[in-house]
Length: 89
Image 1 (cartoon, one colour):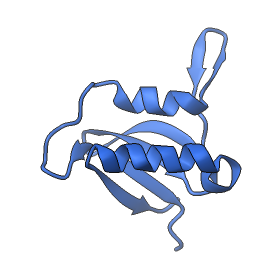
Image 2: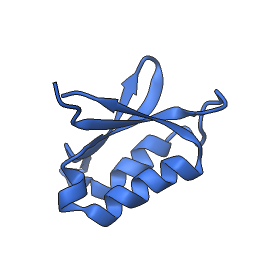
Image 3: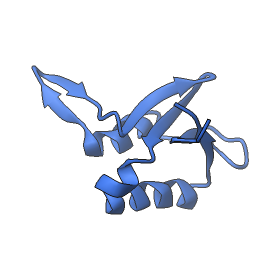
Image 4: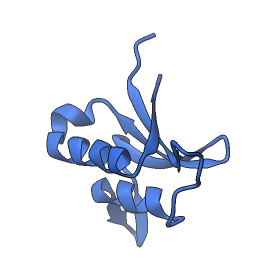
């Protein structure tokens, strides 16, 4: 199956948990909308818990629809030495 997701994990390459604790929500909030006083995260970029770690899951289609935000998000992960993985579905 072709890899369609990029997962930015909330742990550094050195093994430290990334802070602040709401980093994933803040980062994903750049594509979120608000309805009825609730945050609705985009399916292209959303926070998620995986194996007990906060993560941001990015759909590769975001590269086509929002190329600057896509690149900025990956650059954020690289600058903060966060682990980046490829995922499916």
